[in-house]
Length: 346
Image (cartoon, rainbow, N blue to C red; front, top):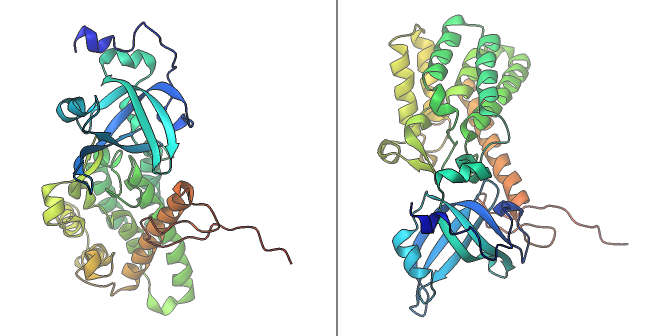
């Protein structure tokens, strides 16, 4: 990094203070750290070329155009790299087209910025919960609630093999739990729901002989193929080649079978666990080659689907800026959501 780049924010008329992007208010100018999360070369309907870029921190992403006839166009084209962290001085504005940034100065983050508090994770959306605590809770749930020691050991072996990956893995690239630690957040929530459902329906239908151990194991492992489907990058989750060509369901089944080669589990339980993995999304258009054909697989499917959709609804309610009692339909659920409103006076 050249001295000129390093000293971009030093001296002169420094009137701005270091403020997180997510805390900027309309009309405020400040210095902040951000990740370049997107850069796309586009053309308007009138043929005017421009770049659409997005900068983000953990709690806000601002997407805006860099017009080809401005001073930043060449720098954007030649020097700005998606996945790179930057220090910016910019004016934040709320407009009819959404939040915008008017950039005054920008440079790549340097090692010395750590003294001002820069950490890569401050620019990445992450779980509200500590990943290490979620992982330990998942291990404890496996040990304490799965009574069959073979099944418990089987699940633990997989969790321990992929521990490092699981601590940062998002649950998806888009839509639900698409943030650092999102996989553990989603899977732990699904597993807890599976415990509740298994107890309820085992008591309600004892003649069904529901296998609670397999419900819990399936809830924990239903998405395990995502350790091979997704990779974590500075810009978020990306699909691996195997993720694009094969997907997480079949790779999850592969992991189950590979683990069975070194850990004892009955053929019957292995078959039922494999079925939970391949059936947990229920429909072929969602990726499942088979629908749930066992009580255990049906419970895992609905626990998974409920958790994902409720998180989508919660995020839509939190992020939507539409006025009135309903959100817009521009959300992963593709529907309006009722947030409530004042009752009409009689």
